[in-house]
Image (cartoon, rainbow, N blue to C red; front, top):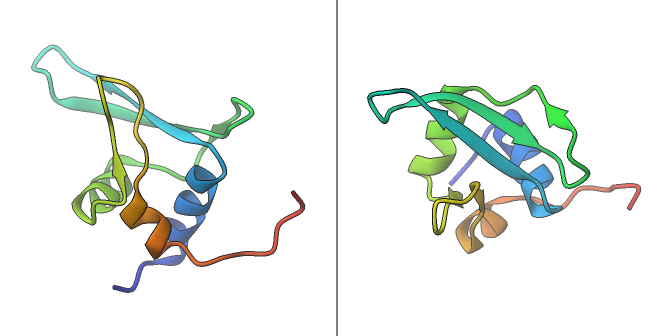
Length: 85
C-alpha cells in the first residue's frame, strides 16, 4: 500500500513517540485534530481528512480513551528516514 508524503511525515513523527489528540463536539463527533511531537510541540501538518486516512489504513489507533498512537501496521507502512536523533 502506497502512502502520500504528508502521511509519511506524520507516521514518522508518531513512530518517534508523537501522538494525535482529538477534540469532540457535543454530538460526540470529532471536531478538531491536533498532532503533538514527543517533546510536546504542536505539528501543524494534520487535519481531519489526513487523520481519517490514517485511521482507515489502520495506521493509528487509540486505547482506553487516550491519544492516538502509531500501530504495528503503521510501523510497517512508514519508510525509514535519515534523522538527527
